[in-house]
Amino acid sequence: MDPARTSRHLPKLLVLVLFCIQIAFAETPASDTLVYEHENTLSIVGLILPHNSLKNSKTLHNWPFFAFAAPSWSTFYKWQKPSGKLATFKGSAIGEANFAGLGIKLDVAVELIHLLEIGLQADGGTALNYGETSTFMGVYDIEKKDYRQDIIFTEYAYGFTYKGALTLPLLVLLPKSDWTKVILKLTGEYAYSGYTGADDGEVWKAGNGNMVNGFHYKCGGTLIYMMPFKRVPMAMLAANVSGFKHAYDFDPAYKDYNPGFRTISIVPMLSFKVNETWNGMLMAAISRDRRYEHSRYETSEELLQKQVGAEWDLRTIMCIFTKKF
Image (cartoon, rainbow, N blue to C red; front, top):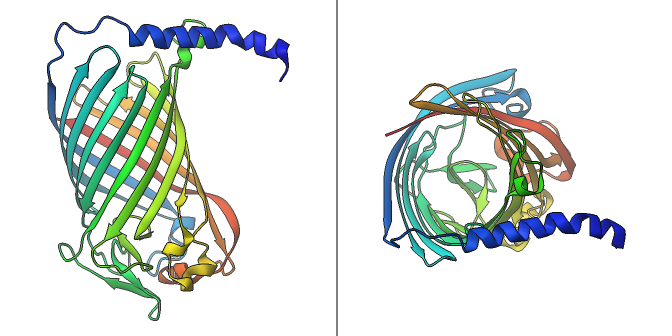
């Protein structure tokens, strides 16, 4: 390591450390009483699926894009209790209903010096079966090369997640300005997911994406840029790597599918304010996914395809309008 280069960055690192210490030992509220919050959120979720996301759909493969909007509702309960100057204990319960199904999440966490948060989340839910156009629920049948489709309230997904997040206020290293408010948030998750209708080794869906009874991970970060605009207050860029922890959790028939593949996703986001009651978020999902030996196949045969590489593509564009009650 170049000593001269290190010495140039040392003052900036020292400022960041001192800032963290200042937060840790700042004046705490006079009371360490329990703080409780409750809110309901109505969301209108609009999705645009480009052709590459539809090319293997049985009914939509010739469409240049497919767009739809659907409402969702969530009920959020949250509590937190400070414990001295260093730690805050948190808990939450969230109930959700959307086009993919119903779900509930329970979360407990501890936040240290307002920068590091470590927690555990338990979740459960179901999904809906829309048939050939889009399967949201069922277990994959290797022999039939299709899903044994379940309907809502017959089987359930469940799981738990260990998670952590570290917030780095990069703004303290930059010249003070309305244009230099930048925060970096690093996150990591290690989760177990299961499905009541699937045996070990079987691939299933209960919502979006293929899963298996076993552990998976996701790690990455989000760069948050707070902008000095009333209507467009924030821009973000998230990047994550995710995958299944153990390829042996899958049946040997999925070997060519490469269960150990690591998916890389990049999601630019823009927050905007519609009016005093409605807020919005515009985002695009770009990801590195598997590339198969056969570029065209029936959508339900994907899990038995042979992976020969990887490819980047725009998977979806999403716009969410939310109103809190």
